Image (cartoon, rainbow, N blue to C red; front, top):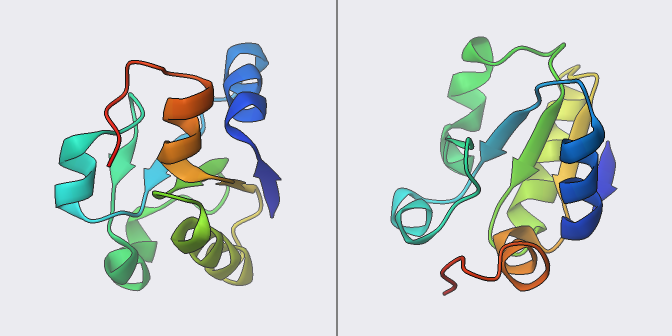
Length: 106
């Protein structure tokens, strides 16, 4: 599992040819306030039941509010055999602060 800051992830997404799954593991009410464009919502509690719908070979960026829940999910996915997992350190809060200054915060 790798971990990127918001700035590192922004740069990586601009430069990479891959199309990573942007997996947001927050709750629907949080996702409704703000989210990174193109991200897919699967709340943390639903991840184990959703493993069959995820591609373990696809690069996956895991996102939450501050990077704690996403780190736990990223470690879980890594343990489940997902080969290329990235945790967004600082979560959407850091993304709003460092990358997208127009993003709503909570």
